[in-house]
Length: 174
Length: 367
Image (tube, each protein chain N blue to C red):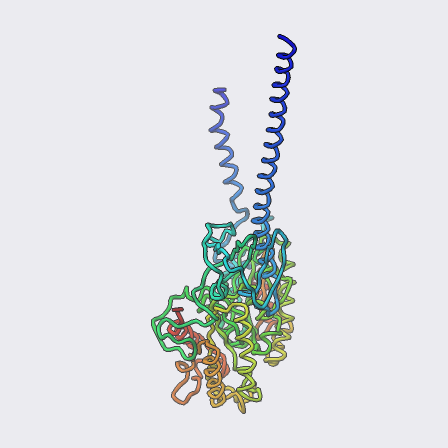
């Protein structure tokens, strides 16, 4: 009995250590840096989505100044809340449909759902703008929707073709 | 022992046995009666609780304009549950009111008070009645206001134009809901105000009832603005931003007639809502004309002034409040300055800040 009692503190210590090690993030994090190319390591590189969104907002072409407002994105897409790790948005305050959304999902499998939700969103936007501001509709014809790992990027800009190139560069995909 | 003694002894024994049997039977019957009474009482409370759950579920699925508060009851009578939504409801004269003060839906100390018409209209939230031998449960919080009219504590006014007063903190808007058009969308996107928004480009006082653009929580359904308001439980503070899309209608009267239906729908969900009708903001007519997107034959400041006068009248008539941030945004010629707008109508950052500051300094605190 004494031996068992003496072992209990060690067992508790092992239990605590194992729990702590489960919480450690895996993979390398590169805060503040964007990916410039695929990593040669087998470990996936975690993107800083705030940096990704900021680069997209500054390097793509927009007719109005965009403002960072991630709370807007969370409210707009509540159905994705459970699967979303974090999200960043740059949006205008005028009438244009131009926007930048970047989602980091909890798993790669969740990115398919995001893409589906964004496609439905674009469809509704087209319908709304067709009635209200038809000159804006062409911007919604080929929005940029790209994924890299757990990250999903959405851009509607003045020049979506150019925006796609920027997005691929930022995400480090071909 | 002789035979007589033996007989007496045997009889006494039999009588004792008989008495014991009678006592046992009586005891068992008494226990059964007590158990039945207790069970009935617990069933009553359980049914009342189930009534609350059913009421909550019903409110969650409600999408029509049926008035919610004050005229919908789940009534439990003699153990039978009965869903009834009468236009009026006559409670027993000596009903006992048991308020659910702590929101646990558990019965609380009985308060002897008759259920009057005033009390019925002043309770907010899910309402369930449990009526057995005169017991009545009303769940919710007393609002202290009646008939859907909210008085401004500062001026005592119950509607119309609000004067400037001390600014309210940002938290005032935490439970406010902005419903409206692309101008409200711009306010939402600016992040200047942390509030709820049910706003969409092109929304008007007619499509408030028909345009499905608000996603429900799990993304399985799109709701109209009125449906979303009801599903949200009817927030107490509502800012309506309409008018710019209706300038092309036949008349201001046609606009306010439909606008009245919007107000009625909101009050039907929440009779105690503080409703603000925002005046139509000024435009920059030259930019509107140059952009080619807006028809300045009706998108102009003269028409806006006419429509705003109609909105003021509507606010006074309905006992709701009128806000006019345009008075701070317009220049001396009544135009929206070019530096404050992208296209002559939609606002840029600094103008949005002016708008928000106006809202903070023109907020009703109920009296």
